[in-house]
Amino acid sequence: MPENTNRPTRRRRILTGVAVVSIAATGAAWSGCGDDEDEAVDAANEALENANEATDQALDQAQDQSEDIQGEVEEATDQALEEGSEAQDQADQALEDAPKP
Image (tube, rainbow, N blue to C red; front, side, top):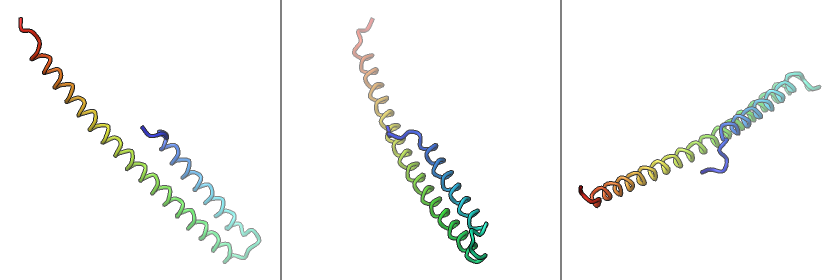
């Protein structure tokens, strides 16, 4: 079982953090912060590019985690099916070995 079972919450926190930083950087750039308009636009574009890159990285990480979880689920399913089959075989054998009335 994976150690961090609260992955959707973690992913949401990462994406929320990226969004907050992006909005703050964009707002600061658009307000001018003492720069001329071209510099503000460049800074806003750079902030958006950085936010997009961070979002892409977070989504890639989430996809990797999703694939890992899917693999773990498939392994657990296979194991459960195998154990169920073994239990059925044991039950069938017990019925055959049981004394007949």
